[in-house]
Image (cartoon, rainbow, N blue to C red):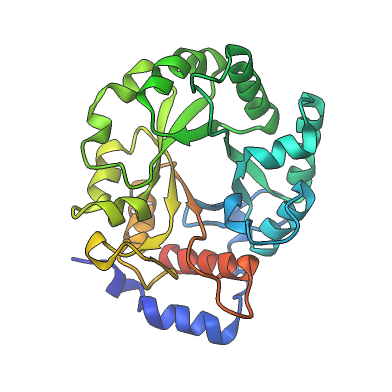
Length: 290
């Protein structure tokens, strides 16, 4: 049985948001987040955003991205590596400054994306640098695309540094992808499961995958794609085939410490922008969890 009907109508909720604009934080949210700033932890589930969601915004500086995150009402993020490198260069001191700037605004960085970590052309020195950057940011994990060859290489280094490497999927994933050896090369190898891409590529239920691998999943990417039969189109939250509500409620019910990161992929409506659309997605997630 779908849980969506027990919570609210997906379409009517998004229509209400469009009519009313961004919804303010409800009482009680603040107690779940430490300190000042935004709060996007609901029912014990940390909802965040991948900063790739703001790629359409004209200012892509670290300072601008921080404002975009705060204005969306989010307190924990997956940060794109190019934002870090543009701000800090190769200076770990500058990386620490970036972490402080974000923390002072109430935003934590739980994972950072370095898409080439473990590639053949990525030196051991560069890999070590990525791990040191992650630690300087306070991030618990680095993310990259699924690669068994990369897993073989970075698995031991992830264990050495005490930082996870979480593998992200597009539509190359299926229910048995992680039955293979990819996670066996290190205890700190993990999964960054994109549930929207999974739905677009497979006919089975992604919830079963979450249940099966919950102890190795570090984070989810939340987007609402239609199924392959419906061309896998990216839709506003509540209008696709991806069980976002059920996935969030599964995390809440089982108290699994899995981050749930919004990734804005659908076309931005005229008159809106990425910040406003991410804020709508936050409210959609919130209503599933409160």
